Image (cartoon, rainbow, N blue to C red; front, side, top):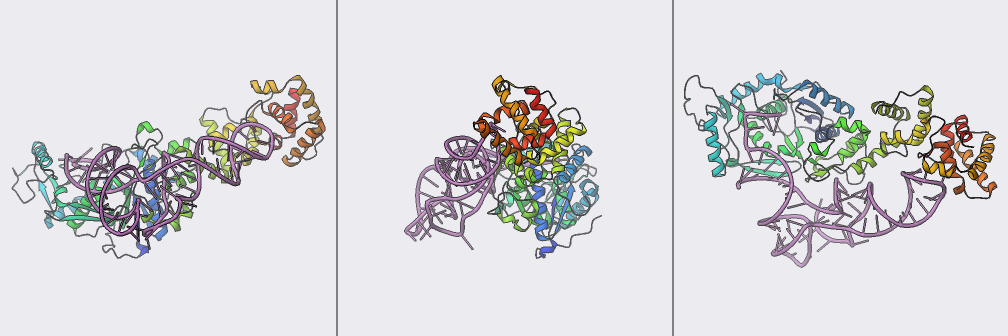
Length: 476
RNA sequence: GGCGCCGUCGUCUAUGGGUUAGGAUCCUGCGCUUUCAACGCGGUGAAACGGGUUCAAGUCCCGUCGGCGCUACCA
């Protein structure tokens, strides 16, 4: 069992900050969850505190080991390492029951013997009266029989209001009449989410609960549970949700929601982090920053209250930024993996080397890995090249004469480097009495068959002397 | 239905009552130029609506509209 909390007083020092990310393993790591994890991680690092991970698997029917792996995978891809051991919530059910029992003893919770029908009737009545549901057993009404099944319910406050001084949303006040006698222990004696979160957050010493604002109204109900146990509640920060490009709640039809899908689409984890952190949060000046750069600047109070939308175009540009900065060998590997995943034949050693040579140039020009793979086609193409229609037109008989002369010039080039090669091209154009516009497109057609490629000097260099000259020779 | 939260360019956002409402991205014009990009310089584009408080409101208050959440023996 975990040690009891040592943070029963809100006057903790910054060093004692404890945050947590608490996903339920019923699917993949959602990008909204990823951002929540990021915010928790950022805040803990900023404060020199701890960032904990808890798997909320109390829903036995919907929780799966595969989902746990997927979530752990996603978090590790994003390099969001948690401190300490992972807490599995279901394993702590005995402790949760113990807390429920304690509340019964304290008189802040009670056994409720309502049948499903009675409950439905109560619900209807509460609905009609515009208030939350209350149990007839809350004040000690005798059970219908000694062996009647029961749930354990929280005894909601009779009057007053509960105030959550939310770090993002400001003071949120809920009146007592709107707080229900919620179920703490089910009839099978398993704890509900509402009980488990409170007990676990308390026992784990969580000081700041940063989560999606779908939990905003739950905070008030949870505060009541803290009071029922005579525990000091943590500080809450409810982050607005992320919506799809159409402004609607994220759902299946928006496509990619899981982080592994973004990885497969060729986005870099550092780009995902940079993009996600700026959804709802702004440091004021910098637009693109790594999570390490964000640590000192991170402020919960700077998180906006309005939901934000996904914008793939913006993500693309953020990804382009990090792609151009990424390590060459890593990018090359990612491109290879992408080509393999899309079903291409494995690269020969020569092709792999050619790709590796091209990566430093190409990574500056591409937004994503698939796009880079597309731009690398010209290096990987095998002779004789297949020409597209434009290339065929460019390579007419007249031009072939000129191409032949260019080849002779190029052959004499001592250094096969893009700078002198570029100069040689200009000098050749001058000697032919034409502009580069009369040379470039045709040469490129011969060199690539029509697919896009970088600057011609670069293209020649990346192809290598032998291959470049051979491709030209193929066309004259 | 009840309760709660939200509402600045298309999008992400800055703006602690007084600004020509700033930046990024997208779109777009021009430049560079051998394609495509990249890059450089410009441009279009915003305070949901209506009241009020105030000398002064995007900023404070109220209402309307719109979006979202909770209202489960899901989390």
